[in-house]
Length: 291
Image 1 (cartoon, one colour):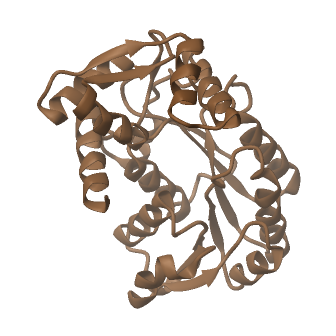
Image 2 (cartoon, one colour):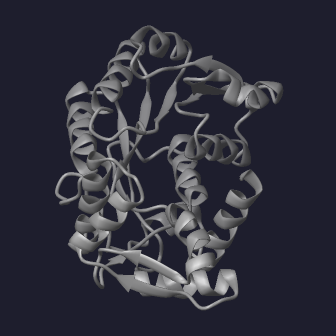
């Protein structure tokens, strides 16, 4: 069985490759697709086939799928424009007769009120219409999304957001990657939709407390109004479109878009999900090393 991991040069894609290797998939049975192949040159040195794959260039997608049985379609990184690229991958997978496609979606993509959801909802619908045998991996938030906030808090002692007292249920990227590896290598998952999250829902006050433990200093959560957040982002130099997007993202979280903790992820990977403190500590260390 040959498995293609798309966006293998990205953080989740690289972890998915590692998770497949950990589950005993031979390096020669893994194809790492990346828009910039130099980012995955080290994988080629380990015996993994590296291919150019750009979602927006259909001929690269078709070439990457040659001889492939299963695909991990990692969602594109540009909200609002990624649906067309996803369609290209799905169309190519159908033409190639792929036996299984796992797609990394977002929590409750078909019903959630979150600015990130429309691309995912449209992709899920197109995938269902295509007839490609599929598994939907609806990922909640990544713990790593807060690493930059924690590093700022090292200086300011504050984590600020416009989410009120809302909760999220994050897990680490490695947890989500491990789940993807499970559904790609096991039978019995086709046609399933998995809501994947951390074991416990946490508030932003909890994130501040975890940051304090990681940093060894006091950190407080500072709730902002949307207007205060937009003003701060504008003062920081962000363009109007980005300011709106970030504020709308916080608004969705405030409405409870990511609040549901579900045991499915832990069940799939056979262990508890990564704790907030452990995940933040690892993410902050990675950011510091790569700085």
